[in-house]
Image 1 (cartoon, rainbow, N blue to C red):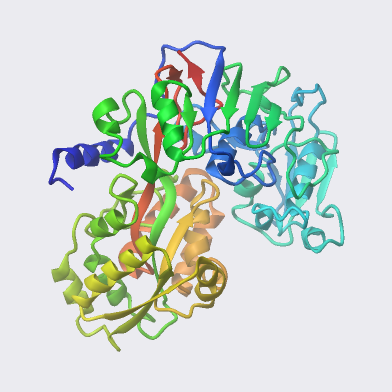
Image 2 (image 1 turned 90 degrees about the vertical axis):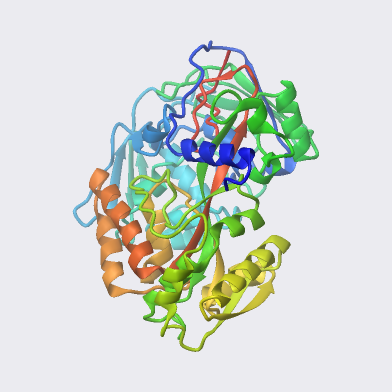
Length: 533
């Protein structure tokens, strides 16, 4: 990483990016219209029930009033839940299956209609509606009666009761992460029907609302004059240009000052093509890097003879693999930061333990751990049939040959891998990407390593009674004790059990105009908090 001045500068910048304060630009003013530029196909929907892409979420987030949300003020606070429309955290019954929320008075949609509990009840109904096929529906499926809604036998789950400012939600069984799932619900008008195509414009109760939407052309957002929450919101609105046909056009327009922000994938910012580090530095004026939540690694299938009850070989693989080479092959050093753990650095509880080498392999340690533990000496590695993923698999094959493992590579379609082979566990080593849908360690550690998730998200079929107990105990805790337990467990899992080969965490790059101030990254730029200078 330090062979050239550019890479040395970039490596330093990436190290700083983990720890920097995320609010910049105090010389700001309120008012004005911020200009956004997006490719139209990155805007999957402006409807909360269907919005899932980063670009769409950035816009929809400005319009949402949530039961429990995240602060727009700084990253350290932004990853902790705090009440927004709810007066406080819910009352939870002794059996941990009933949540009772009380809502604040004063919240209104932009048409002046008061926000009542039925606004959140309808939000749940729309997520569960089978015709909508919302990617957020699985997070609501454990509500009493949700199964009937998903099956098309009911319009609303019986476990959700809304009366005035009181919202009651009953679960079929306790869920330790349910507050993180339901807290981010976005208030929608109680009469807004589910729409498989997604509603383009509807009243919003957040700081902004969508005032105009023309598919493939433009989106306009303006201040909600009735917003009564505490989220900072400085600009008068946003005008979104959907005309660009390529990401180069998006970034060019920002550099020229024709837009204040736009979304592009990380590899579009790559050095040395754009020379962004040389022009602006990192985290100084216009170009920012923040470690994200996207994970890249390889599942080591603990149910197969090669890895079953064989932690030393799993550890050996973590010492043997060249993470720097893998990052170069899968987007470049610019697009990610190396990791040897499973929690992303911005997740509450994360501790940087430096367990395995991040810059180059340690073959001496790897060979010592592998000696006498390679069993058949053969492994089948599955990956998706994309050039960069095949190249990464070949790098792993080359690295593991040095510790006595002969790896056979099988490249299949994304559909075959994600929906058939990975859940079935018919592999030894498998390409494993992951991204947390909410800012709680449960959404990483439990869903990837608790035995109860085998067949769904636990592709490595890791099923240790000991670690199951630790994971479930951590999930039962609250507040800082919860995060501390998860942080320690992340280190213990990676160091001792090594159920997965962790390679990298994606970086979130951001380019803004000269006039963009009040910059808050979570890890993507928070448009709600933006101001203009």
